[in-house]
Structures are given as structure tokens and as C-alpha cells.
Length: 144
Image (cartoon, rainbow, N blue to C red; front, side, top):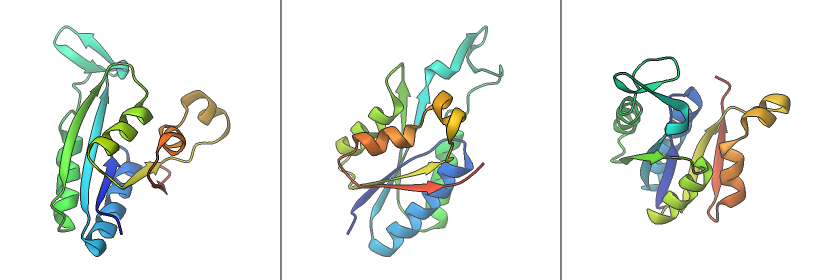
């Protein structure tokens, strides 16, 4: 069975639902969970006070991982968290590389299930991970 499960997390309900699913699976199989958050600098601008989100507010760099840690604790999982920076690489590539680096044998991701024009315009990190990953990938669909 699975020994280490990677879950990429962000501010979305989809990713937190995926983390909850990963915790349930991990608790039944005694697997470890690793939640990663990737800060994509392409989404931010430099303001007079430093790095800010597109809406001008400060970035929630640690809030996502704090929330992830709380979810893992609620499920009795002693998981690890990691914060990664991205300066232009494809997010899917970072996720797959990090899973291999950390010895993960399953990736569980939330997906919004976009189709049609929105999928064409926004792309899909989950689809990229599915195409590139050599380990199993479980997608948890959730419409935010």
C-alpha cells in the first residue's frame, strides 16, 4: 500500500478537500502525508511595500500551510509541509519532481473540473501532473 502521499495545496476548497481525502487514506494505511504549497511569482506584482497579490493585498504565504497542518492534526496525521517558490517553471513539473525527490508513491490533487473555453484559457495543473507523473495520481473533483 502507499507509504507517502503528496498533496499540493492552495487557497481553494478543492485542494483542502483533496488533503482531507489524503488524510483519511493515510490514517487507514499508516502512510505519511506531505502537503506542499507552491508560490508562483508570476501571479504577483512588486508594490511599494514588497511582494503583493494582484489585488494589492499581502500574499498569504504561510496561511495555506498552517491550514493544511491543522487539517492533518484533526485527522491524527503527523504530516510534513513544504513551501516552494516558482519563478516561471510549470507547476505540474515542480509537483512531479518534488514527489520523486521526497519519495512519494501517490499524489492526491484537487481539481476544479474546468472544461471547454475555461480549460483552454487556464490550462490544468492536474492534467499536467497526470501526463508527467510516473506514480499514481488521484484527482478529487470539487467545484469551488
